[in-house]
Length: 104
Image 1 (tube, rainbow, N blue to C red):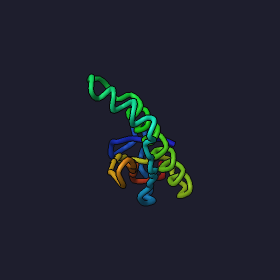
Image 2 (tube, rainbow, N blue to C red):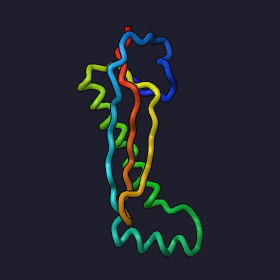
Image 3 (spheres, rainbow, N blue to C red):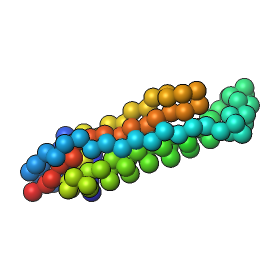
């Protein structure tokens, strides 16, 4: 499966558009992580635990989008986009979506 943020696949020709493939996940922080990150926030620097949490969530959302595209019979997903939104205090959704296509 080829995943790209562009409208086309390099060295590939789109034969059929199958629809929107999407995948999402909602991740929540935990109290222990919040305390350590609050302390780090006082002194400055990267909030690594949160960066790792969001990176994991992005990877999961992309994997789920890819699985959705495979169920449609796609060879590739083009125009891939990622969005993040806060669902609750301490919980964020990451969504990946794009156009599932079949290549020649």
